[in-house]
Length: 153
Image (tube, rainbow, N blue to C red; front, side, top):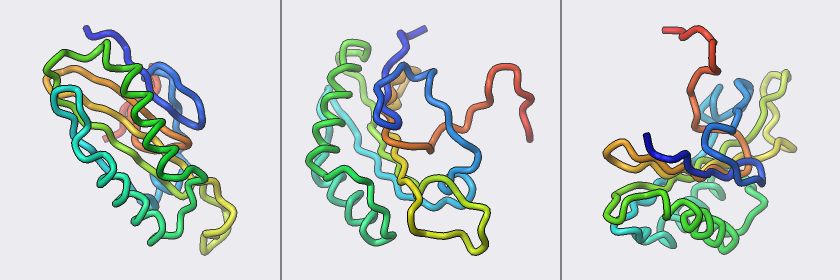
């Protein structure tokens, strides 16, 4: 089994088994969010700036303020990739993903779109059974069941 990799979620770097996501996140409930995937070949992210341009264009379109500018996101992405590179194969092909949601839902109907914290998670999924996670500032992406929880079909 490959060594556990690291992710970034809610402002913290942690092992990939640690993130917890709320079932009340608007991304989970309503698909209210944006994501972008960047492939990585031979340990190099393919056109990361172009992928981040598209992510930030989409965020502006849906009016989600991430609270992190594009240059900060690029540095965070490259730093986290560096943390995980020693755990990935030399010729691994994997992807880095960024998921941003509008944040937690409210009990109001219709749901308010102002004042909710944005959420981000970005992740690498290596092909061939290797994994690297890089999650971000919020909740989204992980749909696994807690240990011991029944699976719902």
